[in-house]
Length: 102
Image 1 (cartoon, rainbow, N blue to C red):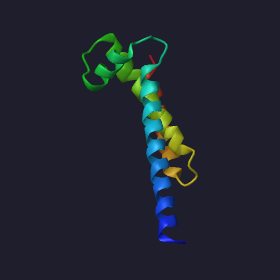
Image 2 (cartoon, rainbow, N blue to C red):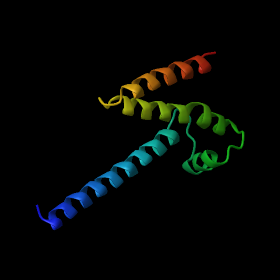
Image 3 (cartoon, helix red, strand yellow):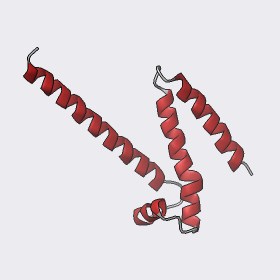
Image 4 (cartoon, one colour):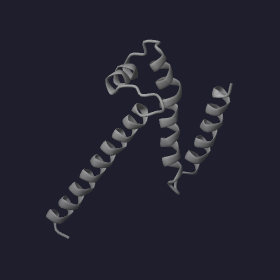
């Protein structure tokens, strides 16, 4: 292989990684934004960075963010080379369900 071919292949990999990470971040934002209670995106964004103690903030911080984290742990669990991620996801799920069961 020539140097140009290796450089092109590496740039495609980096580009794919950047696109994949952008899609992952977008998916996380959408997961926090959408739920059974309609909260405008601007309010969701503000509450992510500044917890004002409102009802919307409670919903986002106690339900939607843990849901998103569990989704990410489940995504990591699907990697066959990550057996510890499966244990972590199971533990996080049980802790979440235990603390939110009332």
